[in-house]
Length: 318
Image (cartoon, rainbow, N blue to C red; front, side):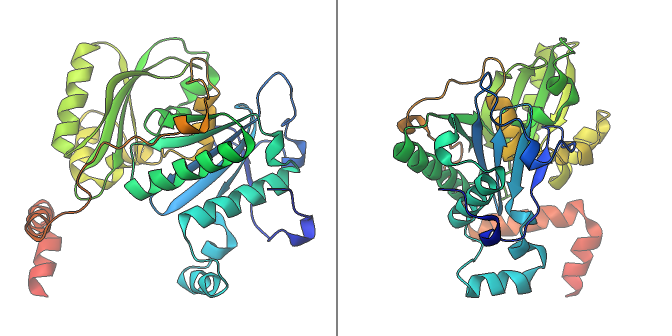
């Protein structure tokens, strides 16, 4: 992918941020050529959105598909994009974002020192798309690639980790919505500026199973400050209720998602996995079953009706 001219580039909003989301300098001023810090290109595909990031771990430019003009005006714009050959297909979206980001930064793919991607856990198709794309780029260019745990990447949203000033350990309890009433969950022991250490390897299961795992980890690390992260705490009522009962804000936890910017920040941290050849870019699957049968769907609907009487009454009335 070679940089296009500015005239050929579609009008779009490039977000130039630190891992915290705070604005940094304009893209043209990004210190993307500093020789002492490798320039990384990151990719994350998460359900119906994907993002890319380019930077050195301290400064970066990002693109999110959900913020592109093809998606900005709702279904009508998406239909128009589809008619023009631009339907929201993750593999094509990600390549488009990569092209736009490199063009905006004024660099080519050959100027990139390393690739990284969110390797899961996550949706089966999302993980396959991300892994396949970085494998293809790595094979074509011999650029090494590193896979970053999607749950570990959530730590990039924690101010104490970004600054590296707080050396006290804390536990990240992570839960991402896995659909079908389940979540992907895991626990990491974290220190400022360092790659998170696995306490509980990524798993998938019911909110009750995740809560039991979280409470066991907290008991094992008594006195260690917990931090909640992931949209599972916002989207799954049982997890949201547990978060509130333990003094946490489920909305704040739910805003933490494994974007490409978060993946890049963690990939650039001390102790992060060393990049390797294309064949090492493997996704992490933790779910064998990808759909509910009819009986399970009915049981889930009944459970939701019991947890939300108003919604159940409305469904009964219809």
